Image (spheres, rainbow, N blue to C red):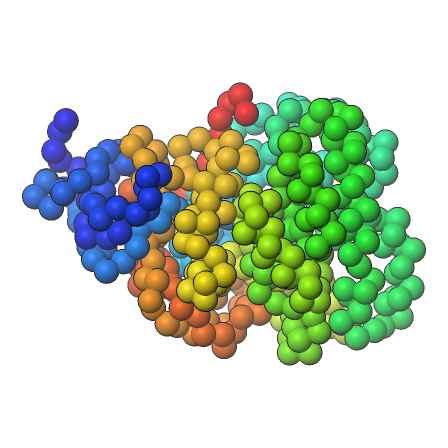
Length: 443
């Protein structure tokens, strides 16, 4: 084997599929080429990771970067820059842009916008609608496509598939695992009177209550079984859903968000006001504890940020005119590492939820682990670094985070994408080299 490399990462504790190993990593042509004592090998570049922990590159499988149409609050450059600063190497972007991402032309437009501007690798979901249902089996196979996203309840944007007939049509037109936002639209409409004329923002979780989520999740699983279609249920937020889903693991995989694991009502609404408003809502502590039990019990497959920025001006409108969503791609790693430090989560489980898990759920090719032949995607962290998250650190065009002022233990020190250092010490370096994430063709 040639003993020269494009880059060597030396001195770190490397989390391989066999666990943590004190080893160097040799990188050639963007992929992991060797492990072992490589200090004497020839290399164009050397990254000294002494005292640091080298993790598989983190994949954030749910972000909203708002381009095209809503670039005043976020765009692909700023969103992916935030990802790189936060230790994330690949993002899966959602379709509720303006216009929505429902056609091949819209996918190609997003890819062309991202090339040369995206700091990390990327892919895009196709949005399901009653109008494009029969085309989805073709659209989901296009290069650069993460899969199909279906909204069963209205959220930010205009995409909505709420009735059983059209949900079934969407499920029957395709084979890849489909991502779904589960809130029951009929129940949302029936209960809208609770907040319509104005209400305290804490009423958001009363209007969009646990039953609203559970009804949609049960409907989805029933219809998915009838269609023989695997589904991935996004941002599960209730104890009742987790109890139901543990009996349906053969067809449904599960995502949770850092904010549902970290925040709880009423404290979050009292402290943050409408900055805590998102769909599905931040709920009372019993639901948060049930999510942690599901994480520990293996029910949860992955963690996404649901990065969904709005400007502070928009968020400060009186509820319910205020939009739902908060930033998250840049804070995913430090918030979850802080949970690791607090003993709520093992580092091994963090890796599974943020790299191996998304790769497994969506059929990502060549990412999700530090292994020979895989993309040399590395999230290098200092597990002992104590830092305070501040709005000034946030790259998003919206410029704020719900975690402003929160001190955490554990911080991303460097992000390496396909062998190239794209972030170190809180600065992106070089130029944007993001490319479409690859998926297993038969998945």
